[in-house]
Amino acid sequence: MKHGNLTHGIRANLDQFLHQLLQVMLVGFTIGMMRTVIPALSESEFGVPKNSFMLLTAFVVAFGLVKGSLNFVAGRLSERIGRKKVLLLGWAAALPIPLLVYFAPSWSWIVAATVLLGINQGLTWSMTQTAKLDITRADQRGLTIGLNEFSGYVGLALAGIITAYLATTLGARSGLLVFGMTTILLAILLTLLWVKDTLPWAKSEAAKHAASPSKNIKLRYPANISEKPTTWEVFTLVSWRDKRLAAICQAGLVEKFVDALVWVFYPVFLYQRGISLTDIGWIVGIYGFVWGGSQFFTGKLSDHIGRHKPNVWGMWICGAGVAMMPIQEGIAWWSLSASVSGFGMALLYPNLSAAVADISHPNWRGSAIGIYRFWRDLGYGIGALGLGLTAHFSGSVEAAFWFVAISMFLSGCILRLFGEETHPKIG
Image 1 (tube, rainbow, N blue to C red):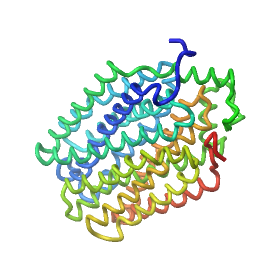
Image 2 (image 1 turned 30 degrees about the vertical axis):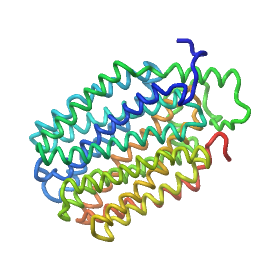
Image 3 (image 1 turned 120 degrees about the vertical axis):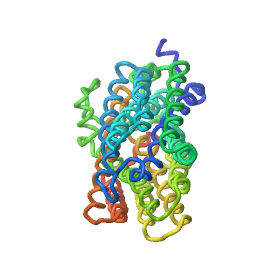
Image 4 (image 1 turned 180 degrees about the vertical axis):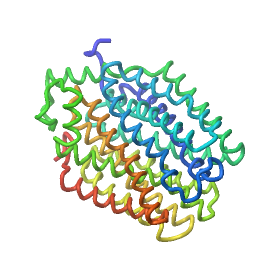
C-alpha cells in the first residue's frame, strides 16, 4: 500500500471508522461485565468479608497497574508490528476471563481475571483510539476521540445493566459467562474479517508534514526531542520534561480515582443502603451513559473552543458530582450526582487525549498517547489504593468519596496553572 495514496478524514475512511467504533463498544462490554455484579456480590458470591476494603479494592489496583503498563507497551509495539496485530493480542488475552469468573472458588481468581482484563483493555482500547487518530484529520481529533469514548462507555454502561439482569435471571456466574464469551468471540471474528491496519496512514501523515507543513496550523510540538526518539526519550518528555504534557498526565491519573470509586464503592455504597442489583446497574449506568453520550458533543466542542477550558472545568464538575453522592439519600439524588460526575468526565476525558495528540509528532504520537494512557490508568491502581486506605482507616465508604472529590479539585487547579491551549488552530 503506497502511503501517498491514503486520504485522511472520517468520511473518506467511514467503513474502517465504524468498524473501530464497534470494536471499542465490545471493549466497553468486556470491562462493563466486571463492574456492577462483581463488587455488589463480592461478599455473598465470592467470599470477601464485610468491610474488607483493602481486599475489595485489590482487583482494581491490579487492573490499574496492568492496564497502565500495557497502554505504554501497546503504543510502542503498534509502531513496530502494526495496530491490528496488537488489537488481536488484546482480544486473545480476554478469552479466559469469563471462565475464571465462572469457576472462581475465591476472590483471588477475580483478581487474576482482572489482571487479564487489564491486558485486554490496555491493548484493545489503546488501538481503537490510535487507529482512529491515524485515519482522521487534525481538525477532527476532538470529535474522533469523543466518538471513540462515547462508543466505549455506552458499551460499558449497557454491559453493567445487561449483566445485572442476566445475574438476576441466570445467576451471577452463568450470566457473566454467557455475556463474556459471546462478546469476546464476536470481537475476535470481526477483527480478523474486517479491521484493517492503520499504521500506513500515520506514516503518510508524517511524510506529508515533512514535505509541506501547513501554514494555517500552529504546530506546538516540543522542541527538545529528536526526530526519531528512543522510548525513554518520549517517556521522559511526556511524563515531566514538557510541563504541558506533565500537567495533562497528572490530570489523567487523578480523574481515574473517580472511575475506581464508581467501580468499587458505588455498588457497595448503594447495596449497603438496600438498593437492588438492577437499580444499582441503572444508577451506575447513568454515570456511564451521560459520560458516553455527552462525549458525542464535548469532543467536537473542543475542536471549536479548544481543549484547555473543557479539561479544567471537567475536573471540577466531575469532583462536584462525587461530593454530592454521600450528602443526600434516594435513587433520584444518587442518579443526579452520578450524571453530574458523568458530564464532568465527558468534558475532560476525550479532550485530555486530544491535547496529547495535538502536541505529539506523528512519528511518536502512538507512543505519546500510550504513555499518557499509562499514567492515566495507573490512576485506577493509585486511586483504588487511596480509596481502600481512606475507607479502612475511617471505617466508612463515605470518606472515600471525599478523598476523590478533593483530589479532583486540586488536580484541576494544577492543570489550570501548568497546562495551556494545545489546539493547532486556536490560541
